[in-house]
Image (cartoon, rainbow, N blue to C red; front, side):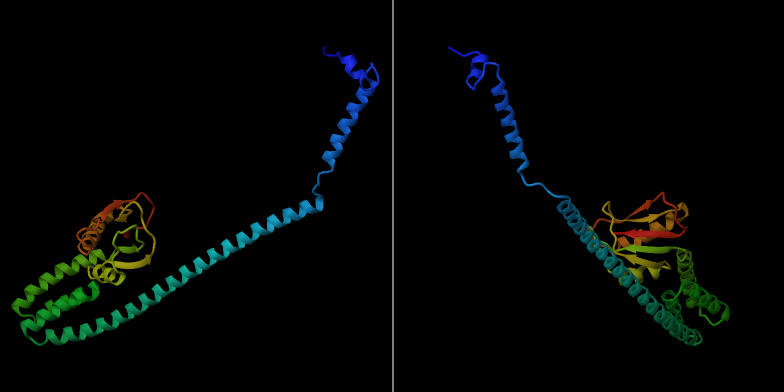
Length: 260
């Protein structure tokens, strides 16, 4: 038969449960003692752990910051190299233009139709404004033959178109997305500047949304279309063609962005 509570307590020496209560209290003390015997982290140790964690985070931040600085320095060096190359190319262009002017004069005064036509064609290889002045001089000089006068009119039309295009400033982004083809930098400069456009900057940024020519003012739409036509003729037949894109961002008139 199951013993009553008082009987069970009596097993420990008293029916009033005094000794049983004492035993329970002792058990609780033992449990507390065992808990207190577990190793505790001191304040000094905790501070050490915190300092170590902060030091690790600080080291990671310093490494990240150094990488950022290195990237910025590389970008600056690349930009300086691009600017130096542009200066050298500009200087070479001026020297070459001087040679063209000398040849132009010699050929025009020759009175030979073929030589005059060749000289007029040279005007398309120099700055449009300079070419226009030389063409006007040739027309007014009275030295042009009948055939050369006809050629002069054709050249004048092309030069006027290039003078209109010269108001545009082109920024070309040469970053590649997936397998999209990106044209060679010097080829782009040669083709675009031959039509009067001014290439003023490059970088390696890319546009994941697709290739295109961005314009920021409705007055620049025709210029953007012309740039698209020029570049698309240079791309492989299977390549995704550039499109004209109006961007609702504040930007100076005449600025165009080219993305591959």
